[in-house]
Image (cartoon, rainbow over all chains, first blue to last red; front, side, top):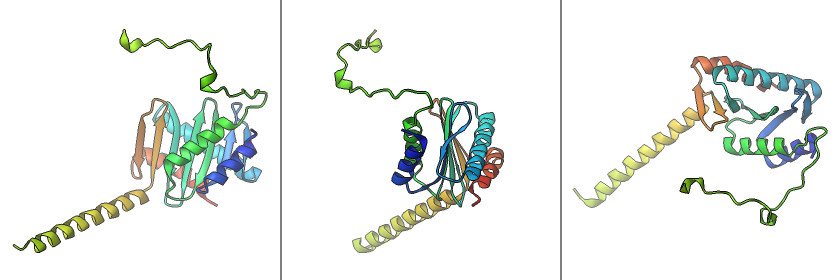
Length: 134
Length: 66
């Protein structure tokens, strides 16, 4: 799925989410639902927010900055990142879940879509050893 | 003391307690804060007034300006 389509689905299912930007592994803007200038501002601000958070607590995977006028969410998945602004007092867990789902549904340029396999159709999968028993 | 009066008193006390909890929760929600979630599952919350929040919240305010 491309970034714009994934963002459209995100804002469709999560009306609390306002502005969204997706930043690829190369640091470039992959998609957004706002004009380019606003998207660049949001992407730059999200990077600064995550960098400052990283200095305070190394290993930050996601953050929410909640203000009286709205919240800013930043979620990192590997080298990729999604940032969004929301209305005030959002449903935090749902927003994080929706942002992660959106980010993971976006294919990186050059990435081949991997077909999903059903868990029941894995006859060759090795059985897991029960380490707890030993 | 009649049972009815005791019951009324208990209901009033329970109502006051529930009301104060709701008011405090709403007030706490209105406070600005930053929550940082680490990859290991831990979470750190910084309320406004702490040095961490004072550093991060202005960055968030910049992004929320229309």
